[in-house]
Length: 341
Ligand SMILES: Cc1cc2nc3c(=O)[nH]c(=O)nc-3n(C[C@H](O)[C@H](O)[C@H](O)COP(=O)(O)OP(=O)(O)OC[C@H]3O[C@@H](n4cnc5c(N)ncnc54)[C@H](O)[C@@H]3O)c2cc1C
Image (cartoon, rainbow, N blue to C red; front, side, top):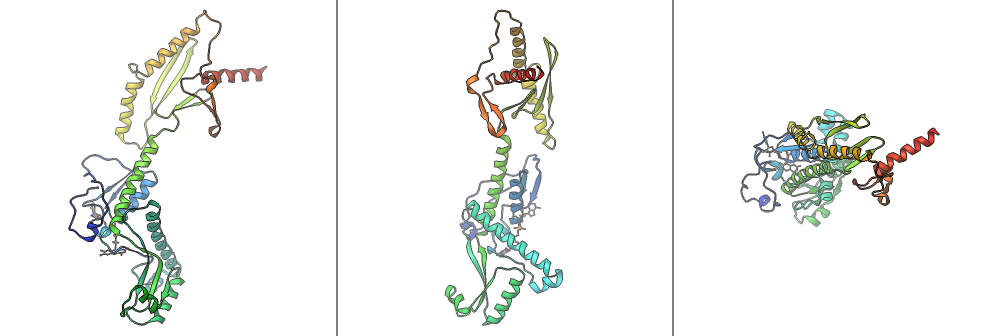
């Protein structure tokens, strides 16, 4: 999003909440969804897309909500510009009712978003009055009936009731929509932009935070959440083992990410790397150590007292440097030998 200089000193501008500078898009960006236009429509889409875990970029030619979305009257109402009779005539009663229900959902979305996120500076004021300037109580009551018939939440207000809140002799009865709200439209749009960014950042954090560093699945699989490769350890003989690394290509990931993964594997798991060479050295030393005749026992008790049950995963937990895995392997063999006996 590009936020240029502020426009004229209107009420909207004078009362707008502070927003971050958003940079021009002058670099390559690979996203799941690209929204063109940072008005109410585009920002709502961006927020919902980000909330569902997709990456999204909003491209705005000017500044977020600089157009109609940031300078409208701020009425959030159910219904449509078109009058009900012509809607029923064109699409039938059932479809008119469905469309009305959809508009109520839209109103509910705005109301819930403001309430649940504590959006600053939007200050929703409940209710909306459609006031008549002629004394036509009967017409208002029949309009209320017609609107209720298609599912509207509306009531008729008498002249007296209207004048209690709007003391003006020119005003008579009114249609009152109690579920409708009046908002600061610019701050609502800016709030949506902030929510879209927050949802994106939270999701990125969620993806990048590994929950389990190292999961061992008996008998011979270890999944390390931080790594993006498969390492196959294949015994060839009692004193010879082959270790092969396969990088994983992430389907749908940006090329730069897959390229970065190969680069990382060169550092961590190539023949000249510092992780793989270390592991292989330990492996060789373990094999050499097992050939020793200096002691009758192999001590695998490290961390014995620190094993913890993990009921959620039906597993046992311990520090990666402890020897639980080795003990588990022997325990399993013991079980197999008992079964066979
Ligand atoms: C005076 C006025 C009062 C209104 N009062 C109300 C009201 O009380 N209640 C109500 O519900 N509605 C009201 N409306 C209508 C409401 O404001 C609009 O329906 C709504 O804001 C439209 O949102 P939008 O996202 O579709 O479009 P816009 O708000 O127009 O946003 C479109 C955005 O896309 C950007 N853009 C366009 N082309 C490109 C491009 N090629 N590349 C990048 N960016 C681009 C524009 O810069 C703009 O920021 C009012 C409208 C006006 C004008």
